[in-house]
Image 1: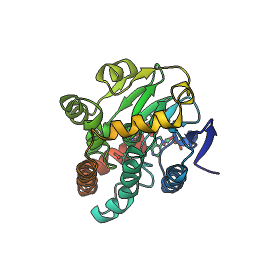
Image 2 (image 1 turned 120 degrees about the horizontal axis):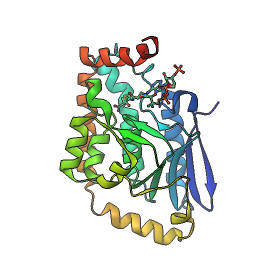
Image 3 (image 1 turned 30 degrees about the vertical axis):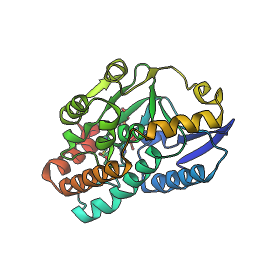
Length: 247
Ligand SMILES: CC[C@H](C(=O)O)C(=O)SCCNC(=O)CCNC(=O)[C@H](O)C(C)(C)COP(=O)(O)OP(=O)(O)OC[C@H]1O[C@@H](n2cnc3c(N)ncnc32)[C@H](O)[C@@H]1OP(=O)(O)O
């Protein structure tokens, strides 16, 4: 079964994560499929925007698949597994069309990173979000912390990354990470505008971001995450997650 699929609504590409039973955790297969879809969208001149969301009501994305990204990986193995999603997040962040993440449920770790790669984020009321990597003994593995500094104030980004707290949708909106709250996905922001308008506004937005500096910061963050991967704190946190139901 495909772990992610794309549908097109009036030239808006709607990309849906499809691993609800695992809270849309990003596996290697999902990474590959997301990459293929992103390349397809990038090459299609007719596409006017990308919307990222997921199936189900429970979670938008619970981050990297902790079964695949287990604690026994060496630093180099961890980097090899983390880097493709960092490359994908950079691709999404620099697409020539506007991108929106509709967070229709919980997001943790890499799920918050993936949403942060989009230009704007709309959250479902009642959902909670957390850059929890600090509590896992690592730093964001896909460059999502570097992206967070582009989306909210540096001091707020620094605080969220170091506190590693799970926050509610209202607080995420006050931070400026969410641009709105909605109980269902509304494509009107894009379907009611022309391709020319949307692509111009994205071009204007990108003029505020030095993409070569952004890429360097994302690469540095992934390298740091990989360096921390074999740490005892990380191994303990991953084991605790999978043994939580036996407690
Ligand atoms: C690659 C590193 C990356 C980064 O930092 O860049 C990361 O993202 S590290 C991973 C960080 N993510 C987490 O720590 C989140 C872990 N998941 C949760 O906190 C919860 O699952 C939550 C809040 C997302 C949803 O809670 P809920 O009670 O609704 O569901 P369950 O916890 O019972 O989970 C259902 C089912 O899904 C499996 N699951 C959930 N998240 C992951 C995951 N990240 N990797 C692998 N599997 C995951 C969970 O084990 C359950 O499976 P089951 O077989 O039914 O027991």
